[in-house]
Length: 282
Image 1: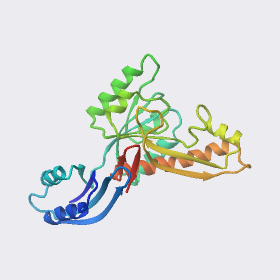
Image 2: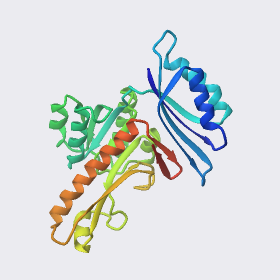
Image 3: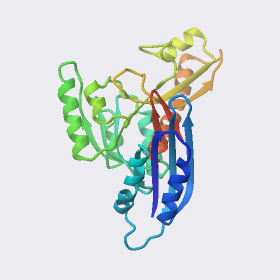
């Protein structure tokens, strides 16, 4: 049985030894381990991927119980999962479907370790994609008058389906603070990296008008502060004066696909830990 342990706690001497000693006592074998001590917050972060011999009594529940004392003694915030566990995901999308198509493909070929339980959109355009992959599709049109009701319906779906993460694959609606509080640190968004320089409609056209030389994309966790959540992944692409606004948009879509897929994979593999307004990505 392979497992992943994530933890954070006040930094001090001997924490790696403490975790390694616990694993040794449990006959665990470390496959991969990484750690980081943040000098600013004085917080220690660690991710350990380890294996245990398959024998009677070797269950994730018993392992969880054995680590409770260690966690309490060192004031740890920690989580423990079977490495094979694939989080159930909800993907939300509007009319631009390039990120959705990419996520569906990467999931189908096994590149992304997630189970997509539901696709939700405020338009019907993505229904054929969901049907082709035999994934449930929910059309929830949003207006100022229906926003609260539709989000309540969405929260019911998340709870009934045991959904663990939400991916905004170019979903062009602002989520309320109440919805963000339902899955803190579990909602991932993708947007162009021109913010805040090029806000509003047609950011790539605005960038073209300004003659930018680099375009990019940012994947971040969603909070109740618009586009201010902790950043998970970013990438840029060099452009030049020969490119049209349409070509800039196409290059931007490529970057968005790559960045969002990386962020989803890092999150699904339990490689991301939130550190205040920042993230630690192992």
